[in-house]
Structures are given as C-alpha cells and as structure tokens.
Length: 242
Image 1 (cartoon, rainbow, N blue to C red):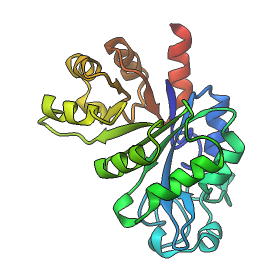
Image 2: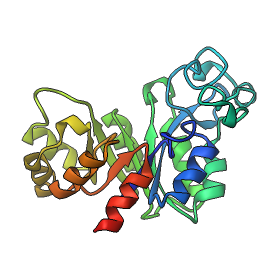
Image 3: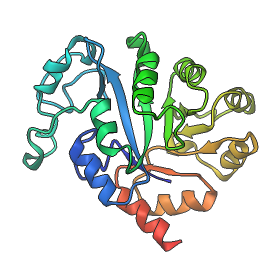
Image 4: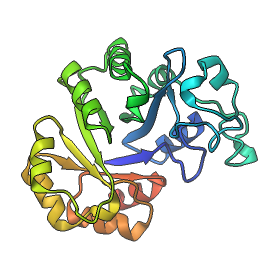
C-alpha cells in the first residue's frame, strides 16, 4: 500500500487539500490524516497540539473553535504558492475523497479530547464508511484504538509503535493481536525478523515514515504491507517496478 503521509507532505503543506489532491495524482492508495477536535467539538486535520508550526496562528487546537481554526493560513509556512490553504475538517475530506482513495486515520492526542472516538464513529457512519475496507484507524494510544474497535468492530485498527532500543516483545504483539489488524512501527524498528513476527501473529505491518528510495525498496523486500511516505511518487515508482 502506498500511503501518503499527511498527504504528499514532501511537496505541499501537510494535512491540507493541496497535499491530498497531489497525493492522488501521485497514485497514493491511502491518505494518512491526523485528526484532533476543536473547542466546539468538530474533527479537524492537524498534527500538533498547537497551531504554531503549521499555521500563522498560536495556541492549542483544543482551545480554538472551528471558525477560529478556519481563519488561519495553513499553507503559507510551507511556501508562498500555498498561502491561504485552510485546515480541513474530516467531513470535508470524506466528502471530497471517499470514493477515490482509502484513509489511514490517526487519532492524535486522544486523551486531550474526551469522546473523540465516538465523534469519529458517528462521522464514519454518516458517510457509510463504518464497514469500509478502505478505512484504518490508528493511534499510539492503545486504549483509544480499543475503544474505536469496540464501537465499530468491522473497522480495521492499528497500533503505532515509537522507536525503542528494546523493540517490540512477543508478549506485546500477542496482546495487540487480540484487537488490531495492524502494527505500524517507527521505521528504525523494522527488521526482517520483526516483519515475520508480526505476520506470524496474524497482523500486517506498515512502517512510518519512510522517505528514501533505497529504504522503500529494502522494506518491500522485507515483506512489509505498506509504506507511509511524504513522497508517494517514490512509493508508486517502486510499485510500478514490481
């Protein structure tokens, strides 16, 4: 699977329509999107807890209404070409792309947003995506992943794993396999042995975030099930070569 990390974020401002449209042109199979919640309970696409890095504003996402977030420029920081790109909502993204591509939805900082899993579930249901094979919900927060799986049992879910010198234990893989379809580790954790262990536990593996052509090629040779990449054209080139 060719998964565009926050869209084609190597070429356009992350988590914006510009990045997502470009990802489709680059033959992405899935759009990876970061979901948080505004002060008035709307699901919005932005990575950080605060808006400083990717907009011209400041402050916490959780303390701003949707209207306040929509007033921010989410593209000018990347280049003048993308000035006045806006923060999208999840319904806007579904309305535009749901028939064209899959979605890898990451719940960001879910502990900051009580009820975000239920809000996501209702949004998926409103677009008739609650049983879609093209939806994967993931998070570093295992409890949030378990809550969404309990709420929508037919949705595929994944657990993100940060880099650790200790790797991922067999006990942890067995625990995750009780509810998850995917284990998505930091790229520095990926080895042939780990890929085999994940597959042996009945799950798939999609490393994040891989950006170098040689690494993409080597990871496919190790048998990973997808690549999360800022440059989806590089993954598409590798797919075509196969």
